[in-house]
Length: 234
Length: 106
Image (cartoon, rainbow over all chains, first blue to last red; front, top):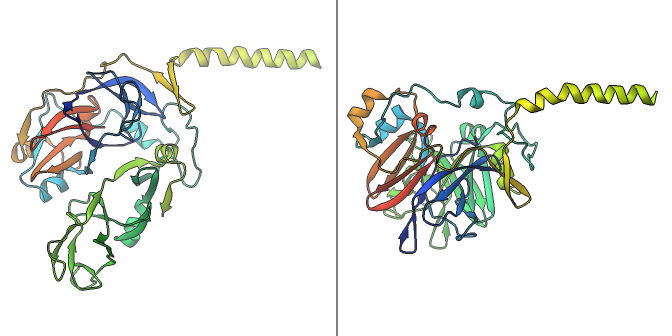
């Protein structure tokens, strides 16, 4: 409904949980229910909204949305979840294609800054949130901003997936730009960075690694509903 | 005049009723942060995948359309993709990658 693919850890403390589809919607998005305690978890935020674990936050991992072709080219050793039957399209294509349909229920906090079905790349650190539009990524390629006081960079990788990193090594803030001739991403000290992995691959900072910030591709109506105070880079 | 307004309202209401009746009436089961939680389907009606199986990239390439959207994750040097067309019907995969228990959700 909100176009959000998210990967979460299933372990809390020493216990591993399994999740099922609750059949419930909150803010037009999936509520997951763990089988062990029946706690309800928001799929968009990974936070337990009611039940035993209420208030607990699931750890999330970087996951990207791209096409099979681009994913396979960048990750030739990948495996794929086996299909038990042929699937030739999305059940939701008409919903995705209709700019007027914003979930099933009226969004309470739809910010009218852009059309509700605009796909944005959302990142959050706690309650601090940032949304980067496709337009900003197309125009700038390496989008640098701030999230909850941390400098961050948002860009597309070789597999065309959008990733974000905190651009800080120790106490140094790293300013990045793409070299027009070589296409390499460099910092002002001459180090070269790979924005697919966040690693410094050459130069004085070789071996340094930037902290990942998980990105959620998400419709604007949903993101602005969960994070009404989100910053926007468009 | 008043009567005319009443009639008009009645007409509007009766016109509205069949439209409203066609819509499903999801049950509000909770209100969180001022927003209602609706129960649309029974728990588990959309079946999560609990025992995922995998195919190699080469086999997958025979089944997948080039433009087919995927959710991709790399952990501990292992890369894995999930077709989003397939996840439409499941929404959650209870999985494990490189020894870490994860849920891929859509």
